[in-house]
Amino acid sequence: MVDTKTDEYFKEWKERETIAEAMTPLLGKLYRDQEVICTVYGRALVNQSTIEVLRAHRFARQIINREIWVSDTYPILLAMTEMDLAPGKVDLGKMAILFQEQGGGDIKAFVAEQLKGLDTGKGHQLNEPRDVVLYGFGRIGRLLARILIEQTGGGNKLRLRAAVVRKGSEDDLTKRASLLRRDSVHGHFKGTIRVDEAENAIIANGNMIRIIYANSPEDVDYTKYGINNALIIDNTGKWRDREGLGRHIHCKGASQVILTAPGKGDIPNVVYGVNNALLETDEKILSAASCTTNAIVPVLKAINEKFGIEAGHIETCHSYTNDQNLIDNYHNKERRGRSAPLNMVITETGAANAVAKTLPELAGKLTGNAIRVPTPNVSLAILNLTLNQETSVEELNRYLRGVSLDSPLQDQIDFTNSPEAVSSDMVGSTYAGIIDSLATIVQGNRCVLYIWYDNEYGYSYQVVRIAEKVSGMSLNHWPR
Image (cartoon, rainbow, N blue to C red; front, side):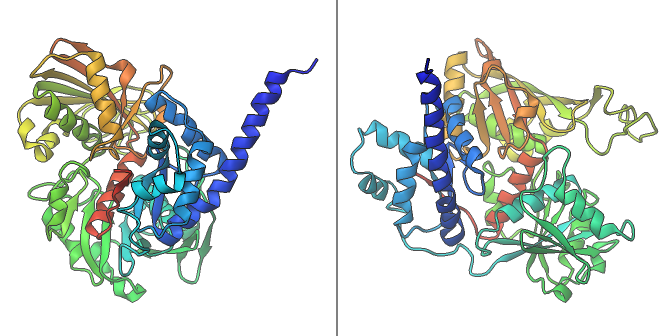
């Protein structure tokens, strides 16, 4: 007896797989030649495997509660390859839904109409690549390296030129290359890595990253390595005020600094997507704030604009970090000396105060605390808010879902309605925060929101977005 249903499912799968295989080179060519990034409801399609392309389409049903197949998006992609597109972000999933909602028709005419503002001729956002140097090559530094390498495209964007570190041993270069190649949380590097001993450099997917040994910023002359007008991303956290970070600016070949930690004093703390106006100035020293601040501020901004926030408390369950001890030992901060993999540790967080720096209208309205938990990555922020008006679970989730799909915060806020979602599912998220809609609680004008965030990778993406913006790179979303 022939099981026709089994054959039918397998045939459908092979057909979708064939289409996804055909899409992959087209997606890559659009990205390399025209700096056009294609997504499906925010999920990247560029530099993805056939299976990952199919998974991105499948994931869309969690956002819009309906299926999108590669057979829906492939004709749109084909039409785009025949156009003279300028750099931009095109969501093939949204395009496919719009096409279906209008009842189909001439696909080429539809795509031409939706992207007419982008069909303005090939070009590059920068006249020449912007040199980037990582000062420090730890958890955030190596993830920034991965993202920058992955986004190299045709080579006309941000260009990672070097990482500055203190020499650890005679085989320092090999060890650092190995740490970039393998990551216990984020998996293997997507591509090839080798070392060039003569240049003391790591070659990652053709990108030569010089490893420069120095004990302080003043020790480095970047021009000796052909590096000029460099954007220095300091991910050591050693200096957080203007005087300390200003030491980078005085180095030959350096012109601007981004700190991957909350800045002190008058240093602007930027949460990309929220207070981008700070990036339009001539400021030479910027802070990308903290991972928790980046996770909660976009959601708080959206909630405050719609419902108003009277007061609230922020509690974060944060994965342990490198400043804690593996086993019980002395630590200059309370409780952090206890073994991180074995304990939940109550500690302080500056997130509530940091909110006031980016959203002054919420100054004095929020309190905050943190619990370090025995997981290596992905954290959870719990927002307990008193609103200025009553709402419901349905209204609140519907509003936040809309913000995640079509708003200036769509790159920062993600949304999930999976009843089985847990922290490890969020590893590798490129968003600042992910709203767990099934955990939302509302009672009158009080609500509790649960926001997941990859405190390493999602935060690093926010840092890169700042780097792109200050370098003159900012892609618009299509369709409008």
